[in-house]
Image (cartoon, rainbow, N blue to C red):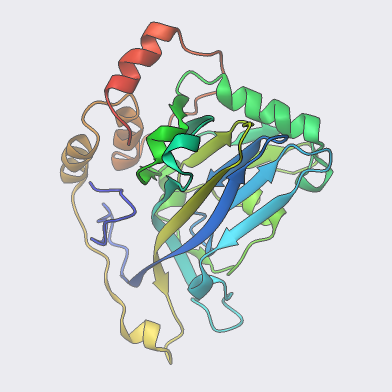
Length: 298
């Protein structure tokens, strides 16, 4: 199973889901690592909006910005799809600095669990966002890269997280607010249960402070199955969602991710078992991290 955001092959499911229009898009934006502030990039596929990325910093009053795919920012009441479900998501990251100026650390974590925030997004302080980043850096599965690694563009892919949500069609929201987007990947005090469903894992990227700002270009991509009103072009383009047995999906998943400890999570989705929920833990031992890094990025 190819979950790379570069692939355009429709992903089959193991139930009869009817017809839909497979659609994808991307949003490209600039992000500069800072001398004074760390920044957090979050990428996922909500399954019901064109919002695929968010950037947060740890300033005293944190700046938050949601990035959405332009062609998919329209909600179901304003001409967009009626419903949608997630297929793929990911991002491409490239450091545009001159070779002699490359510097700084970039941490990347792929996690299935929702983040636990100490407050609602609008009430988060810089110290709380900083503590959030520290927990990401302390996770066993976090990967550390130097800036030179991104002198050539690198691609990272999300994987299915919640098996039920991954196959579920929801009303199309268009573009999300900060709070709406974070409800798909976090919980906080005062939120009565997760309001947004959680179809795919979250890619969390922490950009550490640097002495010379590093200009990055991010391309975040989302792919979806969508259903449209009967009188639209989207509706006429709908085709049957491809079907494959669970055994075939499991076999394809093994081929897609042969090395990884995340393989069990892909298999959980394929067999509709409960997905794993890694909690924020301690940093992995140096030797263990070296072994993982030798397996390469994904």
